[in-house]
Length: 137
Image (cartoon, rainbow, N blue to C red; front, side):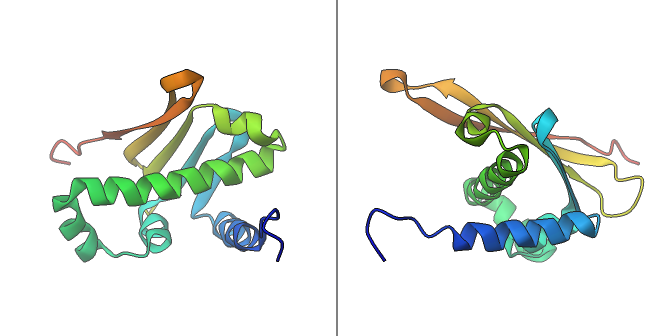
């Protein structure tokens, strides 16, 4: 393959996987609102982990944040693909809401991806995690 071309097949395969998650109700992407909802089980599956490993990874918060950030960037790319806005969509803020697996799908946490000014006019991605406590429920 030529060095100047990019193989988009891995992205297209991943987008097809995400479409399957959407059809089955594990993922809801709303490109016009710049947000998505994903069930906790689907997120763990897409991250390639399970609840036991997740609990261990939470001890290494930076590692878990990095894995979630990579997933968030992919979901934002998928939302941009669905919106048909192109590169401009990727310059906007984006929110990923993680919800419980069973209805009524209560919120567990929200991961916000915002753009911050960086050096020499470049934009820098900033990730913020908001957790919602059960408050003993």
